[in-house]
Image 1: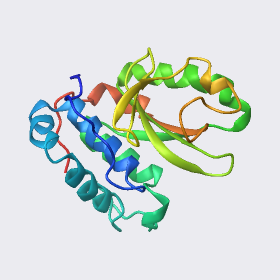
Image 2: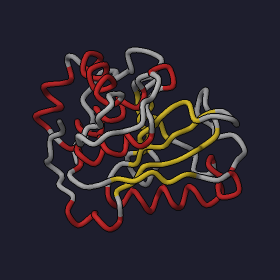
Image 3: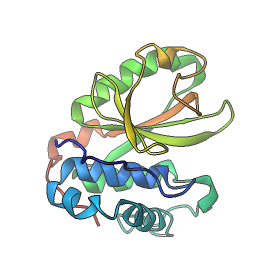
Amino acid sequence: MRSLPDGPLRQPDQFSCGAAVVVVYRMLHDGAYAEETAGRFGDEVLTTHRRLLRLRGSDGRLQLPWPRFLGTPPWALARALGIAGGCRHRVRWIPPWRRARALADVRAALTSGPVAVYVGSRWLPRHVLLVIDPELHTYDPAHGDVVLLDSTAFARPKLALRRWGHPWAWIETDAGDSTNCSSETAAD
């Protein structure tokens, strides 16, 4: 796994945080892609976002239509991360009564690589983050930087991270498919 290139990697609009997470995930797994993309990050994120919202997902299978103003659907993000990482990913929803356990689950999932986490309001998931390592270094597309999450944050009623406070779901490598993961796979 590589480190992120210098410079801000900020999402270009209010709706493309999930696509920015996919692009950064690919950059962490593929050095050539990272070099090629660093200077045109915003354009790559917008192109990826359009791809994620198509009637056919990144893997060519049909997916539910999704309005752009709602951001990136979790299932499309899971498919795209699976292609970028070379193995299937799955969405794991966090019921409110399991928030205290969610951090341990996310940390356990990090053994197979970075984990995307949906956060939002009490009522809706609204933003996607990429937790990079067990120390909780986290890429936040809204600001284009890596922040350190407080390890007690998931157990609180409100996650201590800028605007969106409630963890909703995470996307992890499917345990049944993790042995086939490739650290050098390019996506569509």
